[in-house]
Image 1 (spheres, rainbow, N blue to C red):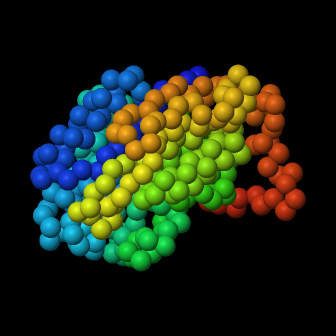
Image 2: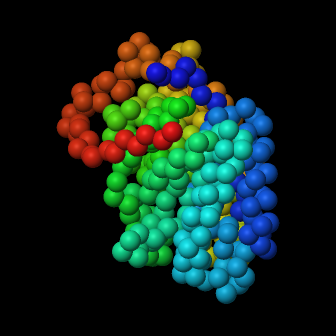
Image 3: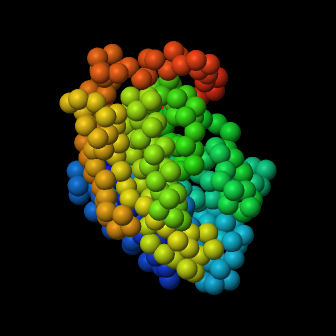
Length: 301
């Protein structure tokens, strides 16, 4: 049964330099507590927020990119379990800040985990690598997934993935109602690319898109040294939905939660009754591709 509304909280998460894992865990716990206090049912953390953990292991790890990737990937299980425990405690769903993980073949991927209050975990790897990630040795994931939960159906487009329309289209056709876009961009221009992509994907597919960026400078890290952005919650610009397509947006480079209530039922009706029918008219485009993508629908309890 479709939910009528969904309240989300998107973080503008500041990359710091914690001295210990315990200090990092306290920071995450406080952010989750604060996010849950807004009344949001879903909390979104950004791309590569997990890299912050490298600071806990001293300069021999955090100043070396490959050592950073290896160490943060090594502790993926514990990082995700912390978020599972916090999701249970605060009765919220959480998109864990993405980070490097290792495949069975030993390659690094950039993966984000969606966790539920009952302890289920869904994983989406980034599908298109940036030039930076290619130079780091991070490889592309293969599987596109949509996550069906008690609060809605979600696709996850990690940063650069949001700039390519066929990925989100395949997710929308598989039932995604909200596109989660964790991002990590060095410059304001990069933030605006992801913002533009998020808004375009919302418009094309008559869904909501939620961007969550890293913010602040971390000169100790060769991976996330500079971070710029603002969180945003976007929908199609339609009468009685949003004149601008922006439900909420944060202050550039501030450390804060940005919240909004998404009317999922109204978005569903919009596909048939809106001023424009972007979702339905996709196939009318001359040469319009029909996404031939194998989308795995994962049910999370």
